[in-house]
Image 1 (spheres, rainbow over the protein chains, first blue to last red):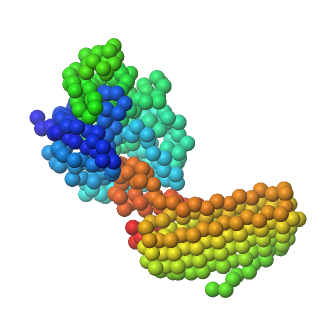
Image 2 (cartoon, rainbow over the protein chains, first blue to last red):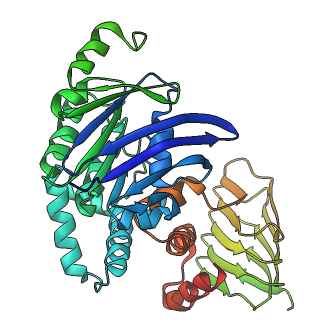
Image 3 (cartoon, rainbow over the protein chains, first blue to last red):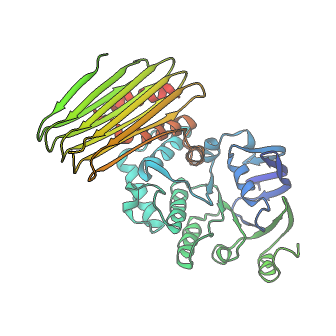
Length: 247
Length: 187
C-alpha cells in the first residue's frame, strides 16, 4: 500500500531554536494516529511544519505526502492536495463572512482541480448541508469568521470547514482544548462522521478524552522534539496512569 | 485644490464620499460648519495609494450649535513610496450641547517605504456631547493570511480579501469593480 505521509528525520526550528529533533512518522491511508506529549514537546510545531506555516524553518529531513515533496509546496497547495489543519487557536477575520471565506476556499480548490466555480446556489446548498452536519446554526453563514465566537463555536467552525474541504489528511491540533464535554462530543461526532476508509488523521493532544471518542490505531509519544514511543491504544492508558515521565 | 467650504443650516443633511484610486494623487480639503440645529454631516472616504502618489486630506468640522451630528470614516492603503497625510479637526463650540461627532481614520501600510501621517484632533468646549476619534496605522495580519492560505485561498486572493474587508465600512458600491481591480493591481 502506498503511504499517505512519510516523515523522515525531520528537524525544525523556530526563531533559531531547534524544536523538532529528528521525527520519523509514517501514515497509511485510513489510519488515525494520535500524537501525545507534554506542553512544549513540539506537537504544535509538527502541525505548523506540515501545513507550511511561515516562521517555522525545516533545517533537515523530508516529508513526502502522496509521494510529493510536501516541503516544496505552499500552504494553499497543501490544502488543495487534501491536507487540513484544525487550528488550536482559530483565527478571527473581521469583515469576512464565513460564506465569503468558504466560497473563496472552495472555488480556489476547484480552480486548482481544473473545475469551474460553483454557482452561488450550489455553494449555498453545500454550505447549508455541511453546517447541518456539524450542528452549526445556519445564521453563522453570515457571521464574520470566528469573530465573537465562543471556544466551542470556533472549534465547531473548524470541523465545518473540514467537512466542506473533505481532506485526505486531517490534523487536529488540540481540538479538544477548552471544550466542555458536550462540545467535545459534537466535534468528535463530526470527525467520526467524516472518516472514510481512505482518509487519515493526526490527532494532537495531551488529553485522553477526545481519543475515547475518536479512536486511533497508532499512538505516538512526542517528547523534547522526538517520538520516544509508538504503539497502540495501551499507551493512552499508560499516560493516563503514569503521565509522560515514564517515557 | 482649493478648500471646499460647506455650511449646513437647520435640519440640513449632507452625505459626502470620496474615492482616490492609485495614480490619482489628490488633495481633499474640506471645511464643514454645522450652523443650524439638527444639521447632519457624514463622510466616507477611501484611498488606495501606490507608486509615488501623494494624498493630502484635511477635514475640519465645526459644530457651532447644538443637536447636530457628524460622522467621518476615512480608510486607506498605501504601497510603494506613497505618502499620505490625514488631518482631522472637530471643534465643538461652547453652545453646541447634545452634539454627536465621530471621526475615524484607519490605514494599512503595504510597504516599508510608504509613509502615512495621521493627526486627529478634537476641541470640545461644550460639556454635554458624545464625541470620539480614532486613528490607526497597521499592517495586514499574518495570522489571518496563513489561516486563509491553509484553507486553500491563494496568497494574493487572501491579501485582497483582507484589504476588501478592511475597506468594507467605506466601500462605494457603485465603484466596487474598479476598486477591486485596483486592489489586485496593488498586490
